[in-house]
Length: 303
Image 1 (cartoon, rainbow, N blue to C red):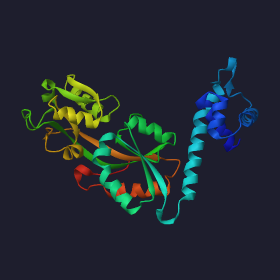
Image 2 (image 1 turned 120 degrees about the horizontal axis):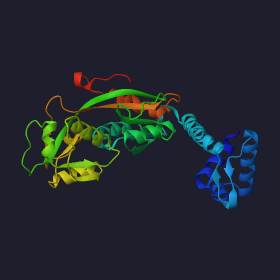
Image 3 (image 1 turned 90 degrees about the vertical axis):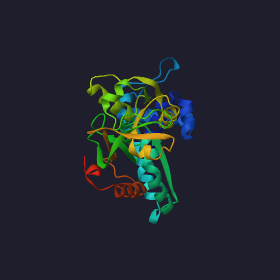
Image 4 (image 1 turned 135 degrees about the vertical axis):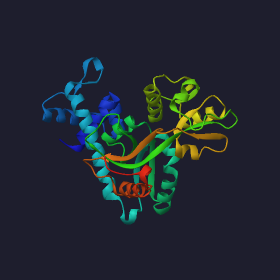
């Protein structure tokens, strides 16, 4: 089994068309078809069903596809690692993070990293923890900042606790001030602006309300982080956000603490256990871990 054959196989699987796949990998269509046939002969199974011109994966093809993608991703990581010059003069880091961390934690760390290593390309992907874990597992990310506990525990990932952060309530500075501090039960009678499905903050807030025996009422839901803060500024309701985000939100938002025990989230830095991150990613990892705050409510550990 050759690397080139796996590359051609994935191209056909994703385009479902031999000619378009050949154009993607810059070879002639007969050469691509010949290599796919050789791969099928070596494996002893057909990978594609070609009935009436429709290209679909067989059961064998479906089984091979995730493995082939991972092999290709690992090969690309190895290529980048080998090509990196000494002293981190070039390379790239593919970092995933939840949207609130892109707003709160990352800007300062990434600015420092870029100042020290201007030749390193930073590729940032925003998403919920579930999506980021999936992207890590398939080799599309080097590192990811995720919220613990993970939506589905993955033995293939290594996670290191980075920080624990309080959640707070934000409201429009022009609206009547909420009770100080805000209890979760106070949210029963308050209109909330809620994030879209897939946001870890949405799950945390809804779970806390349900634990107190009620379903929260939303005036607006489905927004991204900036949109949610904008709706709160407009007086459409309250929102529960991380303290780091609230600190950057501006004077037109009022920040109110949650009554004890409050709500808190645990942020962890994750990477695949079976593949060491590239050198540039390891340097960013070191800087992120160095940014951990000390103290009982910012305790760090391994998980």
